[in-house]
Length: 496
Image 1 (cartoon, rainbow, N blue to C red):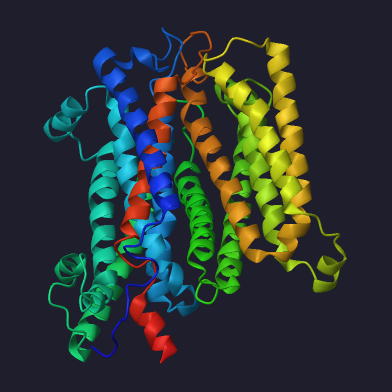
Image 2: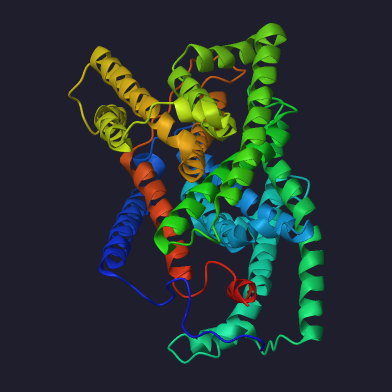
């Protein structure tokens, strides 16, 4: 080995009181999600808001499938970024490569877990998958490409990428030494081994990129080729899924990179150029997706069948309007935030500075009326009339907008904060868009003469989804407490 490590880097194996409290809180949330799922497993799907389409006026797919699509989408950008960094030698983005790879693996695990509650009887669903699977169906492609092939390829890529670091860390005594030796599997970092390693990783990266596009397109085809379901039958479903996957994945990667930069104090490796590059790519993807939205809406409202028009109107002015326009607003605000670093320096200097503390105050204040409206919507509160709910919703919007306006001067001077803020906004929009893809076509898109339906998730569904997020955060934190979040050998070679 050319280099030796004096101590385990990036906080590996070191736990503070605050970290223990965070892990304990995440475990509590995961436990609550497991409890909620136990109620569903015992009592059935009747404890959820899911109901049959048409006769029961509901939706058979709801929050679970929406977040399955969301998690699969988040996973797309992770391994794609890692593969593109290797293929095109984007060395300035190398520090976020492993974060992206781990994000893909964790997101795919969460996607698999989010499907299981929707099955009602998961074991029966898994058994029937092998008994009655049809290769002609997009569902078959979703499970084989996404859950099996995609996850396996991502795990292999993460293993190969970390093997050299594992061999380096295995030289140091400690409780994790056996784990690093197992991961290294005899890797000695000789020139021949390094060349073989680079060659295998290169060809795996080439194989992964078309696999990812095919997998996400197949997920879009699950919706897009259903000719009897207005709102889903569209040529833009598959490319829209791919583009929104890139938007949500890169947005979440920006948030993770900003958190790692602050926690690890790695300002030199996680430099502003990374956030500027990822932010520019995110900006282009958002503009592309907004173009897709405009084209689809113009097509359906101008010349669409009256069933398509009915769904479009439910999004534009009906009961889903708040979610649709909220997602659009989040995407537009993200575009504004990402454009701030491109302002001329002289113009940025003339923007009056404001304290982000006041923005935080108004942001927290906006959560109060928003939470009350959400709890009332979940039937956990019955304190407010419909008019009062609307007033609370508008109050939350006004406070959130004020928070955003106060943050603009700060974001115009801070590329990292701007990237993280845009990442949060686009993921909020991505969740809203996933719900809009899944639900309205079931409640308002039937071709039979049924009345319009409705879908409201219960506390069980919300608890399970929140528990999945907590599980993902727990897995991500624990992994990077036993393995370096960035390449150790790259940091040492740069220091020599």
